[in-house]
Length: 114
Image (cartoon, rainbow, N blue to C red; front, side, top):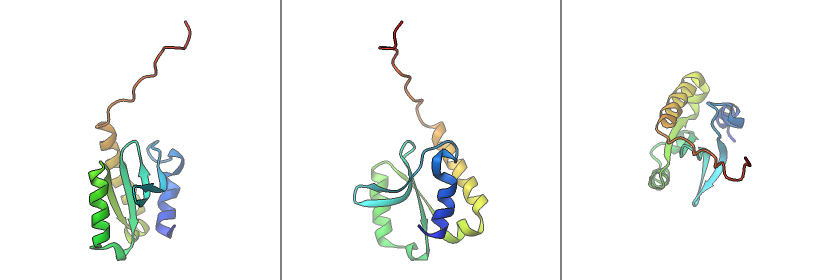
C-alpha cells in the first residue's frame, strides 16, 4: 500500500469508520479495488497523478458502475494534506447511501424454540 492508502486503511479497518465493513485490495471481476464496502456497493480508490485521465481507469470505472458499484476517487495529495475533509466527505457519502438502503431482514424465529 502507498502511504496515503495506509492512512485511509487505518481509518476504515475493523468497522472503525461509521461501523461499516471495508475490505482492501479486493478482487471484482478482472479488477482489484483499493477499498470496498460490499454492503453499500461502494468502492474507494486512492490514486496518484498517473491516474489522471487514464483510459484504463475510465474503462474499469464504467464496468464497475455497470455492476452497480459507486466509485469514489481520492487523490493521494488530497488525503495527505486534508485528511479530515476527505473523511467528512466519505462520512457524508456513506450516511446518504445508508439512508437509501433497505433495512436488513430480521432473522426467522423458526428453529429458536418456544
